[in-house]
Amino acid sequence: MGLTLTQVGLILATGILLTVVLSFVFSNDWQRTAELQSQASSFSNLLGDIDNSFFERTSRFQFSHTDYAYSVTISTEYILITAKGSWAGDLIVTKKLFIPAWPRLPQQNWTTGEDLHSYLNRTCGHRGTQNDSIPSENFTQLYQEQNNTVSLFALHPLKILIKEPVFIEKVTIFYDQTKKHDFLLLYQLV
Picture (cartoon, rainbow, N blue to C red):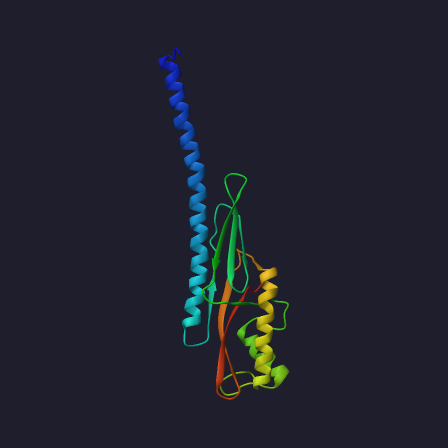
């Protein structure tokens, strides 16, 4: 086998070039995956922070603008972020949310915490605030409505418009004079 110095050099150069191209492609996918994981973790952490606050509060989360397209879907317990990889495959990041959220759609009876208080006032004559608690029967219906959305959003997760902010709101509903329950609402105003 008579290999000349030129042929050996050509084989080495080809190997080095192939290594550089493959490392660039795979490191690009690793970087994208890390960015998507960071966004999912930030979102989940924000849910936990809002839930741990001692008062009602609303916060807004903006997904990052990137030079590649990605999509975000959210159920009551998971966030799923997908993007196209460098090769034909997809990059998929799934993160369990620390705190289950209640996704709300704009076309439903109510979306925000203030909408919920107004809705309760219209339907049961009380706003669900500390000074105007709702009867326990109405709270049971509201709680059942939240539980029904778990299976709905498990089958059909909420698609997030990543160019629009996501609002996360902690709302406290008082019922049966002295009891209270916190709901963590998740919505976009589009």
